[in-house]
Image (cartoon, rainbow, N blue to C red; front, side, top):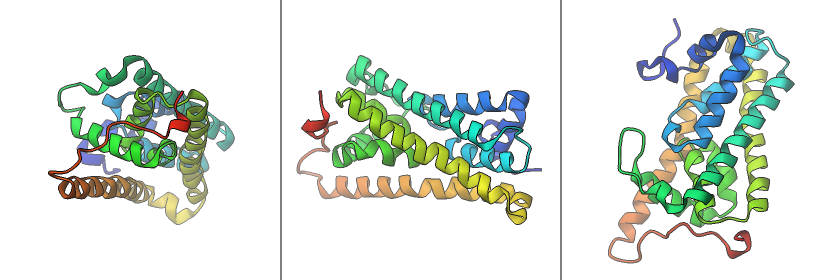
Length: 229
């Protein structure tokens, strides 16, 4: 019995892949696409899913060549951010004007705006490795009207480093017998490790907010002028 993340089956990557059955690549692509393309679905297990599909490709459970798996993941990751950018560009600030609910926390907008203003175009790549942030940053890029050609370039790089990188990591480690035997624990480790960057960013944002209390407010979504249409 593999442990399920927080006891929720659809947050467990191995359960998901097993549930997809013969349509595993379609299912993985769908999860990657919606997790990066829709803010309200940013809680889906993108990092662990990529690592797991790579590992299970190595062990033969996912019956496709690794290059096909990586290609499908790359296209889904790229398309997801493209959709998020389009939503931000067309809907504008209204995207972030939602009330707090179980899927959406307005504080994530504040942290995203500060993160994007600080890192500019590089944030598109960096956010890929930050759960939740990777769904918010491309929307912020669209709201800030980042030059489309620049966004596409950063998006392609991020989709490759994150999507193909994590999938290949799982594939290469999956060829090690010890890793394959105790795969569930390595998957949990990936989930925990992937959470470290966002915890660090949230800590920095909270610390900066305390330091600037009574001074200038958190910056709005701004990007360098050379990246704006």
